[in-house]
Amino acid sequence: MTRGRLMLAAGLIALATSPVAMAHVSVLPSTAVKGQSTEFTVRVPAEEGLTTTQVRVTFPTEVSVYAIADAPGWTTKILKRPDGRIGGVIWSGGAITPSHYADFTFLGTPFSTGTAVFPAWQTTSSGKVKRWTGPPEAPGAESTETGVDAPGPAAAVTIADTAAEAAPAGESGSSGGGLWLGVIAIAASLVALAGVGLVWSSRPRDLPPDGPEDRR
Image (cartoon, rainbow, N blue to C red):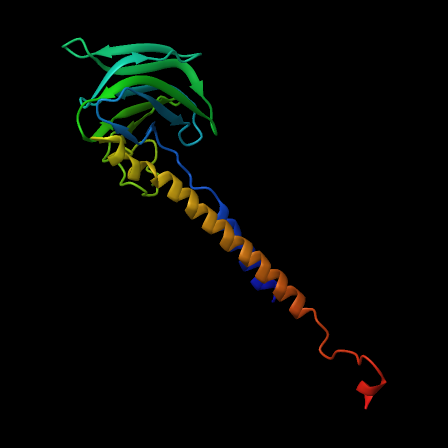
């Protein structure tokens, strides 16, 4: 195998094993069960190398939120709907520095099946506000960077009627793990092939005789 092919194989391995960047606000778990109290987590990565100083989230009407966890280092402001229910929250006063993320949690009970959308607004140290208010991503879709000035996809949670119905969607994460195992296996195969090619290319063209009878 030539040096160029070895470099190409190494590049393919690095590409195959590099993690997919997830730089948008998300809500976990991605699937919940109707009527079941759930702890939700709002995960907020820093945006485009800027420090995040405030996060605002609006709760969907399909989820009845009844408690917000304290977030150390942040001030929590609960937003109420006209009927007195919790309709959203603002976390401010803290900082999510570049290459870091923060988790904010709350308790809620879904009471309607379908897709629950959680619009969010992420304020940066530059004063710009990244809006996560666009159409939610399709399950398994790769995140597309849109920049601070353009809206990104809103976080969404699928609400199933029963735990049995939620299981297939929940197992998508395990299938994703299987996918990465497959990628790792392919990468290992490429390494093995590269080693075999290197040994084969460095072999002598004519093997030396083993004994006197081979010299005849």
